[in-house]
Length: 395
Picture (cartoon, rainbow, N blue to C red):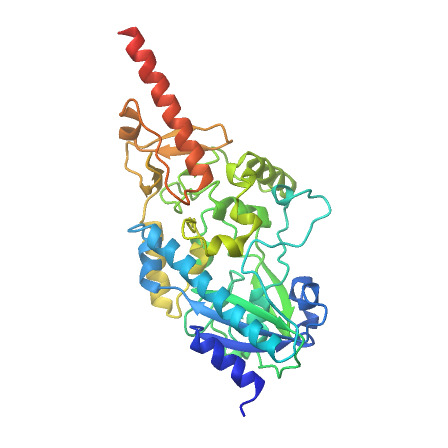
């Protein structure tokens, strides 16, 4: 009979995992707090780490702004696959008498003393780090961006982890001489909010491996960019897929940056919605009506195993232009006539001028529509309809 390690890996591969590795609580003991699986499973002795690659062609269409939604849909499909793999692994381990947990993929953070809820969080430390597990299990190494890089797929992977009380044999981390990151730092050049700093570094140690990575700006900076509160690069010639603008520079000071992020989160309809995916990410992923709203992740999407492709990907991003919001909820590349309009949510939104000259407009909704987009469109339509009514009265 095959070993339990072989059976777990074979099961994961059969369900669609591209990479699988195993590490132990003991190996992770020298890592940061989020590397400790006992936070979620006190009896944890081992971790099965696995990765599924995203579609490279859809990612290219995304970063070049040819197509928005297909990459978002691909991320949702991969998330479903990861939960399915993790559920099967965890179920098999439990059937053999071991305790086990299939760790949530995202949006579950360790409590912060000063935060009453997620809208007041500023550190966003995960309950358990899939990246640290992947490093320790030999799936990849941390690149300059801090993302997990694999030799097979670069950073274009999604990660899952299963914790178990079973005593499994650990795989070895990838040695330094086979490190997949060559410090090209393309990741730092395609972050519109400049989260990944190109010339400042820090170190993190996990499983006896010390990684030198970018000393990034505070996590609230990333939240502002990847949530879409600000999508415009400092050059103002390109953006991520967000049509929203702060209208002012992102603060350099951490305290001011954190305060800004909290204000934006408290004004964000997504954060106030009772059915927000943030309250149950796993349930949302399997909801057929839920849209996996993605506007950034460029630091990951740019990162191919091939340096020449990374350079080409960077050019795709910086030549891609900026984005505007249409009243039907879609995002498209903005033309020169697009204008930005102040919203009640502390943000400005870029809208094609012709969208604002349609007169009376019916508010359109579609399943899974991003709450902020929906409420901004509602506001714009109310403004248009009010202006139309005043025009009719004047006539």
